[in-house]
Image (cartoon, rainbow over all chains, first blue to last red; front, side, top):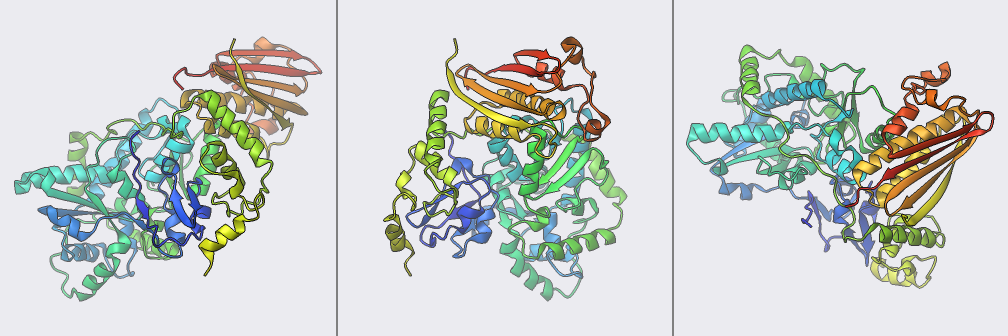
Amino acid sequence: MLELKHGFKIDADRCDGRMNCMRACPVHAIRVKNGKARLISELCIDCGSCLAVCPTGAISATTITFAELDRFKFKVAVASPALFSQFGMKDSPAQVGRALLDLGFDAVWEYAVDIELIDRAIMDCVKSWPGPFPLISNSCPVIVRLIQVAYPSMVDQLIPVEAPREIAGRELKRRYSQELGMKPEEIAAIYITPCQAKTISILQPAEGAKSYLDGAVGISQVYNDILTKMRKITSAGDTPKGLVSSGELLHWGSPEGEFPKLSREHYLPLTGLTDVIKVFDDIEKGKIRNIEFLECHACPGGCIGGNLTVENLYVARSKNLHLRADMPNPGPSFEKEVERRYAAEDFSLRSPVKPRRIEGEVVDLRERVNRKKRADELLKALPLLNCGLCGAPTCKNHAEDVAAGRTEIGDCVFLSLHRIDVLRTYYKK
Amino acid sequence: MAAELLRESFEIQGRNYDKAGEVSGEIKVMLRDLGIEAASLRRLVIVAFEAEMNVVMYARRGTMTLILTDEDVNLEVRDEGPGIPDIELAFREGYSTASDEMREMGFGFGMGLSNMKKNSDELTVESEVGKGTQVFAKIKLNSNA
């Protein structure tokens, strides 16, 4: 089996085993044994809930560093629209773009075009889709992985259209390699990301194809530098032109939904994993019948609430609304570029997304049923308190782990009192 | 003969729209955790939900029994309800005896039984007016699951 990669790592030396991550994980993919947190890779959907709650900072996003970018001859930043909502009300997207150039990027990509292209591709796909409905957006990597792991019967409903960041990566490599006479691999396409999940979609896309992007830099990683550079700029000259030439860019990733043109009767924007899961449960039963397209973001508030953003979600949201209100209508050159590229490029997803096999070891159905029965029996002896002291987030998880032979039932303090003394050796100050 | 691996029964409360769908939800999670492959799981969830809704809409109470074998998943639903006078008619798409109240809640479009038939490999309905209805559905498992 292919080794699954994730957008973050747990540093065992810094881990104090305090279990905040284990309790926060929505898919119960973390165990804390011998005072150290450990990830069950096949269950993890890269939502990043664990990153924010670690009291010792042992969990960090695997974004790339600027030193790693030196191997490229030409570095292009593709900035998530969320980036522009992170600064003061008076800081314009053009100034933020200028600061990115000062930071060492050779160009800042005009991402609004790609977003408009994917908007169109999605709307066309929804119109001609034969079913099953609703189609589900795939730009949030966590949503894609949630479906692969927990809603395998819904993988065919993930919209077969590439994410705009991928389309941007493909086009910028094509264009700059032509203009500068370089090989595409000498050009870096770097996404400035609001979350660690986009990193994993670059390292290991869920559909198995190779990403067009070369890495991601977290917004929080460059925030201070951008702020410093912006404050130093006195003249407005030499700002990247056309960086945000259309309000379309700023709809993307905002909590009000990315498709203002779609009718709300058949289109539902959702944010926050808990709410997304509720709606997915209803879809799976066939309870939601008249919705054609669901736009889903794992982070509450959408991408501007991502775990690598800096600004408070509500402040960022008001900045986003403010920017959108000030945005002029896209000019004729923007429209022309969109028309040209829409006719010239293919936006369909390169290969379909498949469910992830959850059982790491291959055991047959009979053995899986036996394990379930054993787990049900074992659970009767457990207190159902979900105290977590055994190292599993719930008593049910502990019973399942024991049934699968991954751990001992006696790790439960209710069954073996001496367990407390063992734990004391790990947690004694 | 397929060997039975697992049998579990669930109670369904009639007229309780608030809890409607919980039994099929529970069955789905159980089978998903058992690693039943996606295509069969999808069909089973639809059949289970429609069957559960029929009990909720028309009956006082009912039970849904899940029987998993190494070849297929079976659902047995028995309810204490009004029964179906004309089963053939009930299978017709669009035929519905749902009340306005049920329709307002988004149910009772007359697709239930035909939807169940479409999504199962075997479906039999037995009913006695005034006593209740029994539904039996079989969904074959993909052999490479």
